[in-house]
Length: 188
Image (cartoon, rainbow, N blue to C red; front, side):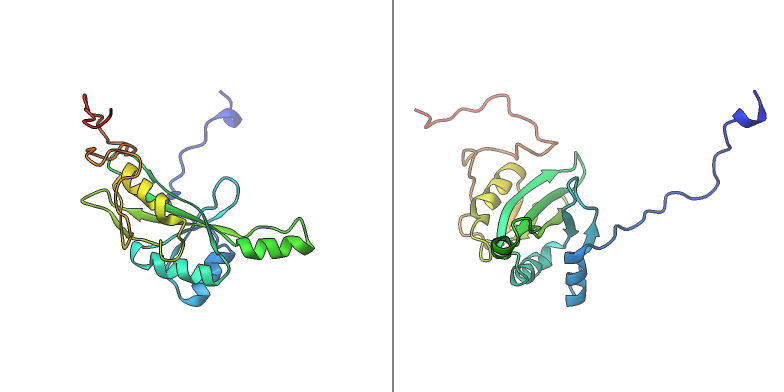
């Protein structure tokens, strides 16, 4: 083997340092307002994502609503894997602003942001409900409770939406064990 074709020796430098993602415009605005949050990597289509603590979720959601994010397009949850965290996300749009902008410029760019709250799966994960800010959160929070077991404090109807009331467990958690048998007493 010639000298030029040798595999270079492994680097002795520590390459494990993680570079924090650049703060997007919404994250910068939140920072200017003094809100604690974490800028996350944008998603696969470039939508800004922001991590927030459960305790400040309603405060940050209210601040964003006052900043024009007046529409909750989607709320949901997902499980990062057995033993990992549960995640709730809130996708907010500046809809009224968009409709107004499109009147003069049909190619106006929609402002949108996704908030994420990371929760431990130990015990009962609890988040404050944002139903009081966005009425569209009603069934979306109930579905997230039903599938992942995340409870929403202050929700007016905190009960299952899709599964029978006596169902045991949370079917979309990665560590869920499906029961061998389930009998619906009032099915017919």
